[in-house]
Length: 582
Image 1 (tube, rainbow, N blue to C red):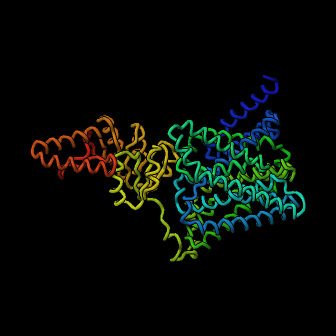
Image 2 (cartoon, helix red, strand yellow):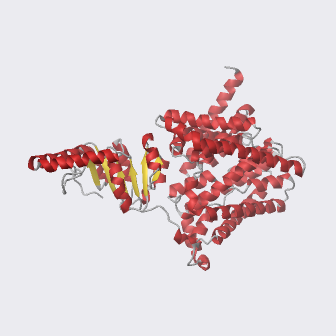
Image 3 (spheres, rainbow, N blue to C red):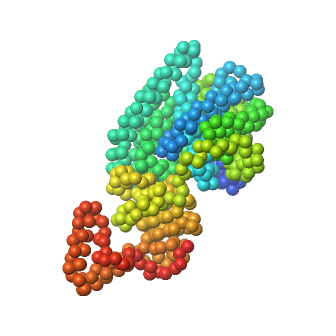
């Protein structure tokens, strides 16, 4: 290996070790890990120690990291999460983009910035911190609450706007007004063409392709990577930015049932590139640049956090949501996003602004993201303090009452014959039913049914979050291995009625001790049922033959459905292990 290669590898190793140490410290102190990654670059770069100096490493890290960051962003965007509140979200997002851009522009101008600096600052400070907001709301269990869904919807629209901004900044934004307008139209046209190709692939190619490989999770991972790099290659061939291709590639995958499983398989790689990208931001900074406008950055941070809250509260309340929804949806979105650094870094690369502007944006992001972490964690307490002052915004006809949130629902895990037979009964008992299954053969059948289907492994955290086990009223799990059912019983609420499968009596006893309400032992169930049939055969052979004919007809009509008992009162499950349940 050449000497330069050894130096590059050594620098890369230093970056990973330092990022690991600082991210661990951040988690212990409740700070966002993204802040730790930026601090890693600041510590190792010119600002403090100056031990990582390989420009080639920094450039490669920034390019690859940005591409994968946008790919993950695209694959997160499932439109079904916000479909029932789409119109108010679009209204809020458009108003937020216009008003916050104007506010950021005005503040930057009043602080003494001029020309292209003001324009880039205004563009860069509009976005919410998607990874931080989603992560913290998920940890609090607020992601499916109405304020959480509003925030997710606004972030999705912001992310689309972000891709357009990055494409424009990447084009240089130089020339006359007419030339810039032509560039904008050309970029949007190319993006529309790639988007159309992505949509056609989503409709006709991707379902078949992913269905053929989904059963092999390693191949699914490789196909996902290949899909991302294909669109990155196409975007670069059309002289668009890497992030445009990566984002559209992720977006086309996001709407498919395999997207969550694919994202889980790719999580280690995408997490690694998150470290890579945000560390590269810190490595590009120098002490003089970071502190060049520190006073202005602190003033702008304070004003923008208050301004962002007031703008969001006004817009959400205008859509006739309750004061609590308006307050919580607004207080979660007060930070300057990490994407301000993305826009700033790209603007520096294109020569539109100088490094001190990136330092200004970086300091704002560090301050506001750190403060907003605690604001989101304690948002309920903040609302209790503010509630007396928000009573005048109450209205009996507010929109919240007409919107349904998934709770007190049923979750069925593992679409085997037992669940298939039980599903109609569960659908009659519960308005909302979520089925989780990882068998490719069942995808088409479940998607055609009136259930909320999630493809994937219930052991994955995001699958469990999407199933919203915490708020489920009923859980039926035929999943294997035994550790899966133990985890489900432990994670569900005490009031949730949990039915789980076991293969052995010892396993059933363990589940009862953990709190399962009922344990199904399939072998004992089959033995009890067979015993009832034998009793019928011995006492009334004609009745037995009639029951057998009915069972055969059911199998032909429904496909491998289990036979009905020959008479009423037949036991259906074994309670061999005993236990009082929850």
